[in-house]
Structures are given as structure tokens and as C-alpha cells.
Image (cartoon, rainbow, N blue to C red; front, side, top):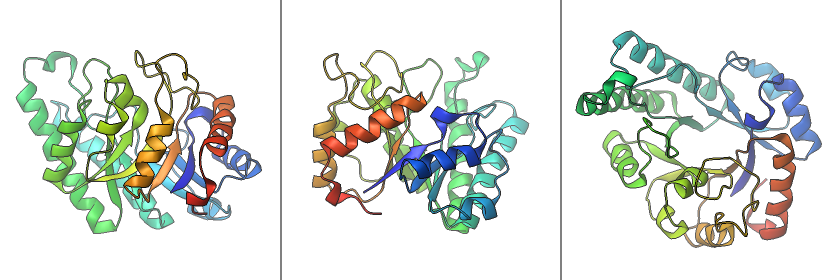
Length: 260
């Protein structure tokens, strides 16, 4: 397993400032959210740091399940652009969000799901062409978002021959136990944050130990049992939560299981 830090808590600071911070924290892995102001990445600059990267495709203004074909096409193009960037960087993983139900799409759910499947199938094929893993992420309990249910996400990724980004905070927010989270065959990437189950608050790890928080000890034990070999990405809301989470991982994990 490798520990990585998302750029999310530092957004929208310049990327080089973020990488300088991670270097000072002795962190060698980073997940870049590939949207403005980090939408056009300079691979030479990134490669000047002793950091390995994964890429998170854009979140804003995206919907691969849109009724509007031009929006679907644009969303797919942005995901493919992130895959091209990852390929140039030598990054193996691109995190992708599924689509969401448009405001006037609630009575047309079958069509929305068909659009989503068609778009993500195209993206998955492109990922194979450029040599990266497309890892589709489970969503939090917010109205309109698709694939909050890990069982439905597993069916999707098997259908399109892709992989899963397991966001444990999102899964906890949707009532999944740690045992249930880890039973899926194609988990290739993991996002870490904490919450009390009621809201996807992206808090520091262990922040809700006494308040219905995620059982990280059970999670880490389970990951060891299944011999998970991917990245654990700390994806929290605030910069201070990054250092809290690093301290938590240092104190609660056998560092011998980590790879540099």
C-alpha cells in the first residue's frame, strides 16, 4: 500500500505550492484534481518533483449522463484528456465520477442510466488504449448522484471492464460497513476521509472515533487481509486535516506495509 495526498484541501493554490508543501511533509504521492486552475498540467514541472501522481478527472461542469449530447461529449472529452495526461506522466490511475440525474431527468431514469453506461464504456475503452486504469468512484448520499450503492457500481465496472475507486467516507455515509466495503473484486484505488455517517464532511481520519465515525482499524486490518496493493489517498477538506490524517496513519498503521 502507498499513502497519497489529494490536492483537494489546498485548492485553489498553485500546484507547485501544493507540491512544495507535500515535499516538506515527506509525502511522495499526490492525487491531482485535474480541473481549473490545475486543468493544463506541465509534465516537466511535475516530473521535477520526487513525487508519483494519480489523476482525478474533473468534477465541475461534468455529466456523462446528461440528456444533452454535446455536454456528454464534452464530459467524455475531458475525461480522455485526463487519461492522456496520466499516460504522459506514467500515472496508472485516473479517478472518474459517474454521471448524475439532471433536474428534469427524474422521470427518465432508464435513459439517464443508458447515457451513463454508454459514456463510461467509451472512456473505459480509451483507458485501455492509453494504458491507464479507469477507476470509477462511488458517490455520497446526495440527491441526484448515481452509483451511491457499491453493489450497483460493481455491476457497472464489470460490465465496462473498469475498476473501482472506493471512497470509504462516501460508503460510510451510505450505511456500508467496513466488511461490506471490502468485498468487491475490482477495488484498485481508495479515498480516505472520516465522517459521522450523516454527511460527507471529508474530515481528518479518526476525527469521529466517539461519534459514529468510520472504523479505520477494521478497514486497515481488512486491507491487509485482502492484500490490497493500491494507493490510500487522503482526501480531506482542510490543510490542517492532512497533517492530522498523516499523524493518525503513522500511529495506527504498521508502516512496514507501505511501499515508498
